[in-house]
Image (cartoon, rainbow, N blue to C red; front, side):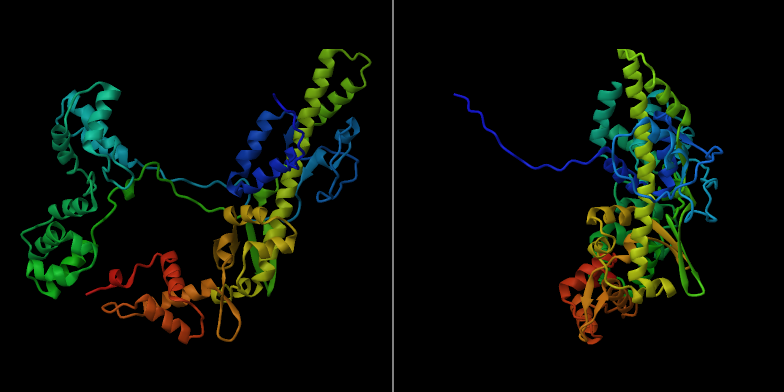
Length: 476
């Protein structure tokens, strides 16, 4: 027998306005124009441009309004009819500034051109195009030849075999740039050396190091290489010098769809005689308004005595679009206020750093610190910090650059982990490269300087700085 069970639960749901705000908060300044254009296309009740002349007294755009059902009057007389985020937006980085992109051929186009110079029949040309299409942006053919054979059979109905593809690949590996089409780093470097004079003793030794001792070379077991090839440390040093000047990513110069990327800051911070002045990028100040024609249309329909089904549907549609326009404008307003509040809180904590740009003056700061200061959720601060950047007098930095954990010192103070990382990097830069410092030794040196740090933390920071272990930093 089925039983009826009554249960009570509490659920939290986001309003449409909150969802709109969260989505817009994550959008970088460079993409805000595109997002606004999308909204303008789908909502005819939202317009862009200057406010038409009106005798209405302008209202504070930051004035908070309680959520309620909107009447016809709300759409005819409110601050949304000509919303523009004035202030904190007039900056030299204007919304009409154009950014150039690089114009040139892609790696794939370069290789196709060279393929045309080979005397291939139509069948071979198809095989060649399939191989070129499998070469990645770094210039490597990492896909197995048997898999490419299957691709040709299933997608184009062409029968071939591994040997035939291998012979054609050898011809492709003669293309420019040198090393293209290699299936491993070892092969890539050897292909580049094969174009040099291998009669030369140093070039030949470099080639033998790669061919015979690549495993030892990759692990920097130099003594084993000297013993295996019967060469001196000086000869090995010269050979390694040749190898390190080769290009491990031959496709990098012609990567697919390469474009010059410009970082557009969301904030601009200027130091004027010791006073820090924060402004928002001008692109964060769009001119948006609710369509007055749609508002008047709503008023006309709403005052009509005839209330048939079709008219009610029309009124409902217009109200929906007007609500959406008001919600979008309000979300833009909230976005700017949240950005400014978050950035100002960061500046207040890192004031000494923003005065001089000295990373050693960065204080320990986590998302929770900012969230508590501005009275918002950590997830909101995270959305701002992870996708926004600021232009200062000493460079453009992502906001996450200013967040770091704290490390205690022997004097009882807390310092930023970034300061410790800078000390760690300095120690490694100054080390004897023939006898690089181990993590244990670095731990002792940092402890001597007053930082209470464990060896595992040293290892973690070293990895975050992309610095290899001592054995792999060793040089002859």
